[in-house]
Each structure stands twice: as C-alpha cells, then as structure tokens.
Amino acid sequence: MAKDFHAEPFDAGTIKKLEIFRGYIREWLPVFLATNKGFSNVALYDFFAGPGKDAKGVKGSPLIILEEVKGYLKDTTKPHAQRVKVSLYFNDDEKDKYLELDKAVKAEETSDLFSVEVENKDFGDAFEGKFSVISAPHTTNLVILDQSGIKHVTEDVFKNLIDCRATDILFFTSSAIINRFAGEQAITRYFPGISKERIKELDAGHIHRFVCEYYRGLIPTGKEYYLAPFSIKKDANVYGVIFGTNNLRGLEKFLNVCWKVDPKTGEANYNIDCDAFRDEESMFKELNVPRKKNDFRSSLIDELKKKSLTNKQLYRYSLENGFLPKHVNEILKALQRDRKLIVSPKESKGFYVSWDYYSGKKDKVVTFTVKE
Image 1 (cartoon, rainbow, N blue to C red):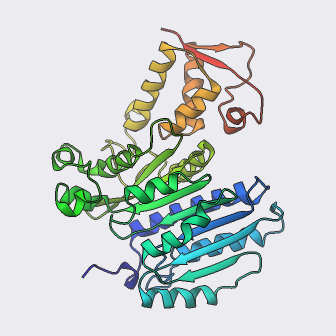
Image 2 (image 1 turned 45 degrees about the vertical axis):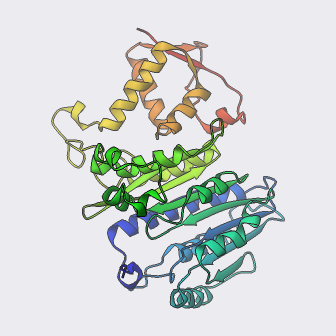
Image 3 (image 1 turned 90 degrees about the vertical axis):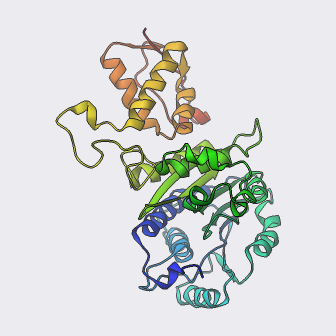
C-alpha cells in the first residue's frame, strides 16, 4: 500500500512545494483581481486536495488557496475588479480525506466574496465534469494537480489544459518513479516517448528537467506556451513541480517565486548542477558563480555577438531560459562597464528589459550588440 504522507507531518520537500504554490498564488491573484481583464470568472482548482492539513495541522494546498484568496479579497487597500466572480474548487477521491477536507474548509472563516465547492470524485470524473467551465472563454483559471505519482497528468489532460484561453497549471510529478522504472509498461503507458536507454544517459539530479522537456515536446509546433520546472529532492529521490502558462508575464511571476526559493539557480532545493561552492564561498570570486548563471551569460553574449537584440527580445530570451530580466540587466551592466556593449540609440538611459516595455504598456525600443 502506498504511503499516505498526509498521515504524517509534511517533510521538508513538501513544505518547499507548498511554499512555491503559495508564492505563485500570491503573485497570480492580483493579475486578475486588481483590474477587469475581460474575464467574468476567476477560478482556482485543486483536484488532489487531500484532507487540507497534515498530522500536525500544517495547512496543505486547499487551505493555502482559501487563505490567500480570502486575504486578498478582504483587504480594502488592494484594488478589486468589478463584477468578477471568484470560485474555488477542491476535490479528493478518498472518502475519508474528502470528509476531513470538507470539515476543514467549513471551519475556516468563509466569505460571500467567493464561492467554495468541495467534492469526492475520481480525478477523471472530476476533471471531465469541470472542464467545460475551465475552458469557457470568459474564465481564467489556476489549476493545481498535486498528484501522488505520475499517472493522472496524461498527454490528453495536458493538451486539453494548454488549449484553454487563460489557464495556468501547477502540477507535481514523481520524476523519481520515471527514473527508476523507465522502460517498463507501467511507465511507457503514460510516457511512451521515454526510453530506459535515454534515462540512463542522464545525471540522476537532472531527471525532473528531463520530464519537463518531455511535456514541452507535447506542445504543438507554433503554439505559444511556456513551461518551467522546479526540482525537489527528498532523500535520494527527485520529484518536482512543473508550471505552465500561455503568457510570458505568468512565466515571469513563477520564475520570480522560484528565484526567491532558490537564489542560486531558481530551480531546485538542492545542488542541481553540482556547483563546488553553492552553500559556501570560495576565495576565488569566479568560482562562486553557479554554472547555470555562467552558461546563461555565455549564451547571451554569443547571441549578442551574432546579431542585435532589442529589449523586448531580451525580455523573452531571459524567461525562456529560466532567468529573470534582472539577470539580463546584470550582464548588460557588466558589458557596459567593460565597454563591450553597443547600445542604440546611444542616449538611452537604461536597458528597458521588462514586461511593461515588452507588452507595449510603455513605449521604448532599444537595441543591443556586443563587440567582437
């Protein structure tokens, strides 16, 4: 019988995962609740909600969602869009957990500012029952799929979700299971493109990156959709969260949370690239820069040597490579100090690498090139 982690105190890895969930919910809510963006319904779904708390009463994802939504909507100092319905949906397929969850939700101070629905259904039935609402054009959603294992976020479920107009997804997957059982029927039925030979070629610490790439390969050619992983190590096994969005602003907000959780790489709760000085500093300054940051700097400079890029292109480039605009700005400043950066127009006062300039909210286009 599989271990029920709700029956024990959450471990450090689960706490880290919940920290990411909370962080993104907190970033996500103001985007759609501060001003009316043409959506009449803002909804958050947790299809594997569990009982709501662990054995010590620490809040799980459904009560975190409830707490964050209630906190935002009850704060009169925050802007609130008019005529927008806010709804929360929690489901668990185990009867006893559903009953505990329903009780925990009812024990919270609820509000007429939003609605809460709690159900006890198999995931497939719950997802099918709610998909017509999730896919409605007037609805924006955050869908959390905190599955235990790997089998529920199938290719069909994934493709259905990424086809929705404005739906961000956060799903947990046990990459360690894929790493251990790749090539066996239990894995190939859900991940037909993953072979045992390919897994053997990987560093074990990179398995979750690989799983994220597998899902990235399911995105149809030409479709604008973005994924980002966060790897979590529990003992010797690697698990993780995968985030998905069709909006670069959403990707930036998720990466912002990740870089707060992991200031070294923005991607893991462990030394994912085996950096020699991740947790302590060397007397040699250059050795203190994580490999991921060094590789990004090199690749960006190579791009700028080959061709000029605008501030808008650099904004996209940073996020698609798992970095934030501030990281690009740091590199450009260093190049400028070394007199290697060509900026056009010359009189530009800054780098203007941000969502406001990318989206056109602010009008400024600057071009950058690096001298050979």
